[in-house]
Each structure stands twice: as C-alpha cells, then as structure tokens.
Image (cartoon, rainbow, N blue to C red; front, side, top):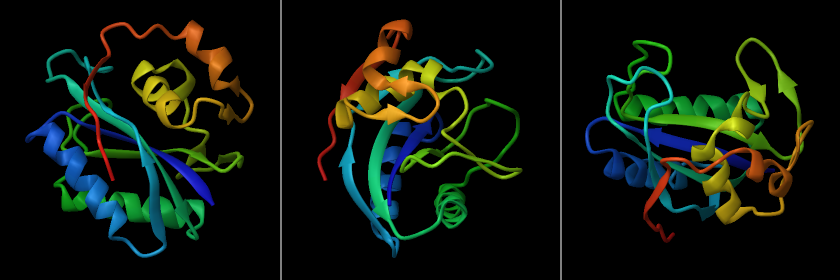
Length: 162
C-alpha cells in the first residue's frame, strides 16, 4: 500500500530530527520510502510561544495495515523523545498518516485522510512536490485544493535525497 506521512519537528535541532526520522522509518521492516519532499519551515499552527516548525511529507510503500503503521510511527516518535504536553504544542517529532491509499478511516485512534490536511500549507505544498496529481478522498484533487490554501510564511529550506 502507498501511504503519505507528514513529518514535523520544532525542538532539539528540528532539521536533524526530520532527517534522522526518515532514516529510522527506512530501517523499519515492511516500510520502503519511495519519495521525500523538501524540508519546509513554518510558524507554529498552535500556541505562538514556541519555535517554528520544520515539516516534510514522504511517500512510503508498506504491507502494514493503517493501525500497524500508526504503531510504527509512534515508536519512532518515542525514539525521538516525543512528549505529548499540549495540543498543537512543541515536539521533537510528529509523524502523521496523511493518506493510506484511497482508504477512508475514522475510529478512536486514527482518521484517514488526516483531518484538516487540506487546509495546511505545511502539508499541501510538500505533498505537491512528490504527488502533484494526487486525489484526497472526499476532498478532491490536490491541484484544485492548493489555490485555496495560500503558502503564507511557509519557506522551503532544504532538499532531501534518499
């Protein structure tokens, strides 16, 4: 299955956190990263009293089901010292399943497509780099969504190569 993962960090050298997380994900069984966007810097979406974020999106192939993939992502977050203090607060690493094939899922642990992804420049612009023609289930094509989500203060800071 092809899945898209959002990555974010704003603590303890965020650029390195994202790069190391990509390596950590690539080393997991049943996961093969096929593409990675550039790294982007953006202001925090939540409380303003925190550092800017570094964000990226990657595409991976996996034989894991959505909940197994979530467990794998959360284990990588834990390796990076993720502490859940406050909603939309600062973090060493945040890994979100944005899309999992064309599946729609809504349960107590996981919502796919990721809620609000279609309104977040720090998700859509990196996603457009690696999957410009993708369709987001129940929302529409990325090319139709992008014009209604201005890039704002989002800045590309570094390209990544696998």
